[in-house]
Image 1 (cartoon, helix red, strand yellow):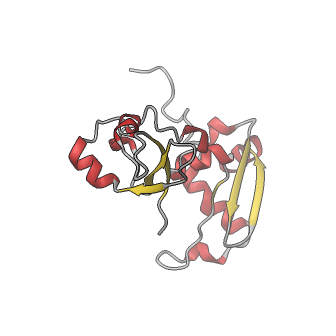
Image 2: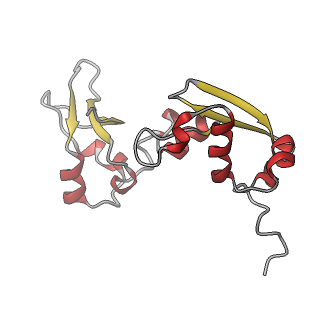
Length: 166
């Protein structure tokens, strides 16, 4: 059994004492930062999800009463890289085909092959689902580039991972 208190986690306000706690609401066009110690004095060691409606109500948000439609969508503010990770977005510098497999790709990412021939400017989007079915989801994406052949006759392609348009 751990000797740490079960409320000594990020999910409780006590963990945020001495730190800034940011809240953001895009509907209300609001971004506000609070001192975690002051919030702790006011609300005690409340869990963080329960704190949001209290702060929203304190700021005058009328949507806190709605539980089904047009409800308050205030969330905690995070740094952009943390927000992107929480939302499932992959940072651009991590989009490398070398070490990723078909199984690693989220549904919103697709593949495009660019001919390696300097004189040829061809590019072709690839059906990643057909390739995954044929080669297996554990196949590294970098392994298929050398196997592709362009219409110009040159063998080999650079594979780029990108977002699929809706």
